[in-house]
Length: 338
Image 1 (cartoon, one colour):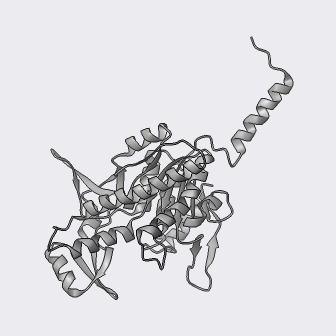
Image 2: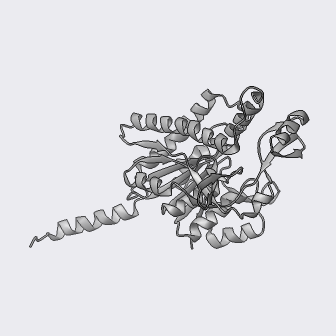
Image 3: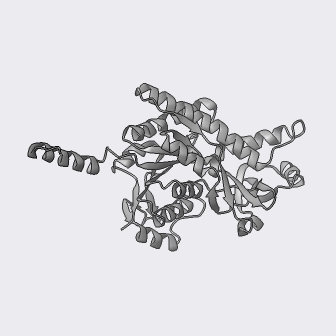
């Protein structure tokens, strides 16, 4: 039998308490960091590769600080501007090279955005003398083939087209809608049901690998009896896909980084006010009051509600350049269970 002196016993107890309550020691908590499409191309930028890499390097600093604080991370990201550029390239070369379907365009954007994030995080880790592996997973998202949105495409994607180009797209089978700035392709945006590669992502996390996944919401697929998986011409919301992945890997934290410092109610009115810390019940009430437009903050709030209802501990919504500061509690909207 080993006897421990009172002083040593007291020291062990104090150390245990410090480890449990310290905000900077997270005992391998799992977090998903969901980067908005504006993370890589800022408002007013042309979006060339130099700007995208510069923006990626900036956000990678916050990500590596989370790694140093003990988090196991999955990074998800939007792809709106990038997949729009791919559509423009398809349209410009359609008489020479057959245009690719939407799922292939999303997969392409997952690959090149994943490459940028992967390299920038690696370089930031290298500067901090941290040895850690990073992997990008091309991610498929299972949807319900009976999802009502599949019969009612409403999600605009890609650039604006003139009428001549719009007519060509119609001949290729795309659905087009007229908007004030021109014609746009509209596609279904079904609800994500499961992440096909979730088990692989979980295994990589268990091996202490930083994972980049669910880019652009992932490629929506359905299960076909006797066939397997089949792609669908649709897009899945990135934040809803991130939440679904967070459920499946049992993440503790969902950090949504976007182009506003906090969530606001009565936004763009004289009564506008930010939400600092808000409970799940409070945010559900605001959501039911339709405080958050479906084209912007709505899916983020719905993702937050789902995550907390399925056992998540906290959701933070903050500016993409203030991720670490938001994690420390100095900015952002913090949504918690009561």
